[in-house]
Length: 392
Ligand SMILES: NC(=O)c1ccc[n+]([C@@H]2O[C@H](COP(=O)([O-])OP(=O)(O)OC[C@H]3O[C@@H](n4cnc5c(N)ncnc54)[C@H](OP(=O)(O)O)[C@@H]3O)[C@@H](O)[C@H]2O)c1
Ligand SMILES: [Zn+2]
Ligand SMILES: [Zn+2]
Image (cartoon, rainbow, N blue to C red):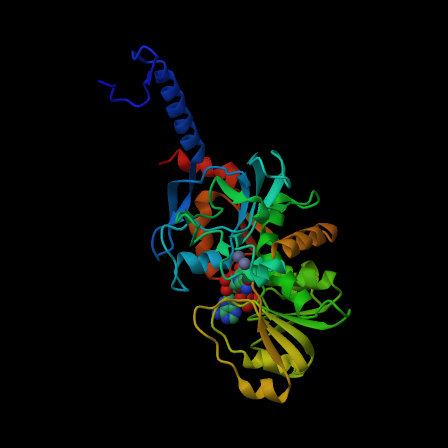
């Protein structure tokens, strides 16, 4: 009778020989080793309270086209906050947020040509797209109907993707960015979402074609403060539009804005009517568009970047009577994101950050809700995630 175990092989004399035991052991050992290597650890939200807590999960095996990244730093974007609170209604828990990731490549698949182990790399908001649609063919993977977000999304095999508030991530090389030497890993991390989100519309909507055009930046948060720096590097005149005068001196003295407009100062708002060529609207909550249309010149363009949970009202009269335009923009394609990183390295543009430990994330989220951060929290992932691990 043949041995029940299929790992046993038969000799010519039909005697069963247990040589394959060692093969089986080796295979099992290898499986255990690779499972061990796939083990990952992060901080996840489990429901719409948005409270983040330690979470064990698995990353996929590093495939032929993949890069495994040991995460060093991860920025905290307001989109992370919207997602963990289910503001947009499509959150699927548990969710590890984080899409402003800088780290070190620790493993590369055999087809990976762009990176080698030890390289400093970045991962942003997207980790997949179809690679064959009209958008993908124009390097606009960010508008691919099948784009895969870094977290709160599923891969084609159905596994849930988790973001950068974690120790490592495995990403197809096409969605990994070279992180330029000149950029610091911590304050450079926010460029991977906030940076490209403001850079791309400046180029697409014609803000960079002629020097000296007037740009209004509505909301001085993570996106807004980088918009000021990139706008100035493009030679624009930049005015910050904010709810109070709290950030005025910083905006002008530190970030380099030309002027500052407080939305509640009705006289100054009146004086500024019809003075701006463009407005980038980065506000994360519901607000009125009417004052922003008033600030625009004839033919002026308002570009919506912020993603409030409820629709905004569109005032038709100022739009029609001033031949004004309203558009939107979502991050940027991979090629343009690389271009933006190189541009920021060249112009010494980084975010103003407050570096936090992983275990500080819940209080940081509370502060972000109140716009109490100058101007981006960045998690020191590699130096603080394991201390959280030892406490569970
Ligand atoms: N389009 C994209 O691809 C993309 C990419 C990333 C993020 N986003 C979205 O962009 C928005 C901003 O993200 P962020 O990370 O820059 O957020 P953030 O750091 O919180 O900045 C948002 C700013 O908006 C202003 N603001 C907040 N609440 C307001 C309110 N109730 N009324 C008026 N102004 C208010 C504040 O500026 P002041 O204090 O100066 O008034 C605040 O600093 C979020 O909705 C985010 O989801 C979009
Ligand atoms: Zn973001
Ligand atoms: Zn596509």
